[in-house]
Image (cartoon, one colour):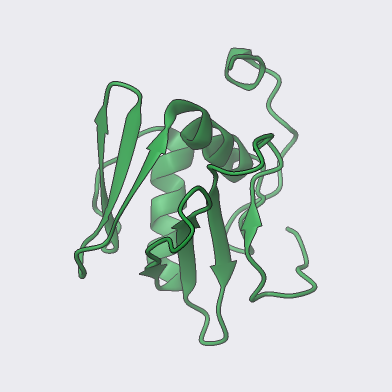
Length: 129
């Protein structure tokens, strides 16, 4: 597990090598987790409880988007992952590279105490892109 110096700071995956266009997350004071899209100047923010976040990260890591996490539904089309809040009208759309970087960061335990730290992936997923 990682210890965060500033839990409210926005963070992105270490696999994100783009200056913009990344999934960013932060933990806010009440323990909720928020995500946004860095390529949007005024990005909508989608909020998760800690339990919803843990369930969603499990879906992302397993690459099985069941949409049973209670916070978001993810639909996939050619080159796009649309993350829709289950409770608001907010949508975030990420391209293949952005989603890949987020997923690899999740696999590597980069997104909070709800995940377990593991070795950096070295398979084809990590090398592609």
